[in-house]
Length: 321
Image (cartoon, rainbow, N blue to C red; front, side, top):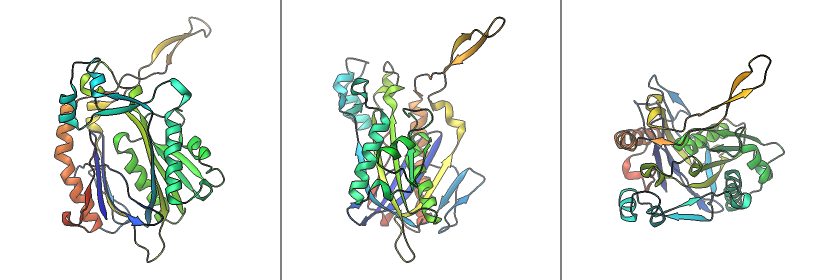
C-alpha cells in the first residue's frame, strides 16, 4: 500500500511517500507537504536546489509499528460556543473538527509523557524493546523542557545504553522532517532502528479569545518505529520532497516575549529579559492560500522522486489545518 502524506505551513513544507509492509503488524505513517521550485535526481538519497528544496528517492528503511497518545480532557465545538463567537456547525463544515484533546495542569502529565506513551505503543506494535533502539527523534515545537524532551522520552522507553536522542523543531512539518532525518541515519548504515515521535501541546500557546485559531489546535503525540533494510529488501520510505521559506514566517508564529527584570548588579543594575512567549498567531487566509497553491506541486515532486504516479497511490493524508 502506498501513502502520500503532506502538510503545509507558510514556513515549512514537506511531502513523503511511504509504503506499508506486513511485518509484525501492518503500519505506515504520517503527513507533510508543500514546495517552492522543483527537485529531481530520482533515486538519490538527497538533492538540493537553489530554491531551498531537498528531495530524494527511496531510503533503506521501513516502518515497523506506530503508536499514539492523547490527553483525557476533551473540548468540543459546542464547548467553544461559550468561549468565542462560533458554532459547532461553522467549525465542523470548514475544518472537519468536532473536538480536540487538551493537556491540563491536573495530574502532572506533560507532552513528554504523551510522547513516551506513543513511543512505547509503537515499540509494542513492532515487537521491540527500548534496548533495540539506536536513535530517538522528538519533533516538537512545544517541549516540556526547553533543552529538549527526546532524552527523557528515550529514558522512559528504556533506550538508554547506546541510544542518541535529540529534538527537532519544524512546526507542522516536524514529524516528516524527523522521518527523513531518521531515515538518513538508517540509510547511511550508522544505525539500525529509530523511533520518530511527533508531539505538541499547542493549547498552551493558543489565544483562546481568537476564534480564528483556537478552534484548530489541540494536544497529542504520535510515534513510528523505523528500521534499516538490507540489500535486496524493499524500502518503506519511497521518496520525499521538502521545502523551507522563511518569508512567510509572520503568517504563522509563536514569537519570543521577554519581560524586563532589573538585576541588582553594581551601579544602577542591569535590565535583563525574563523569558516568555506570545500567543500563537496565524493569518488563516494566507496559510490557506499557500497550502492550496503549493501542495499539488510538492505531491508531484515526491511522486517523481519515488518513481510513481497518482494512480499508484492508495491513501492521501493531508495536514488538516
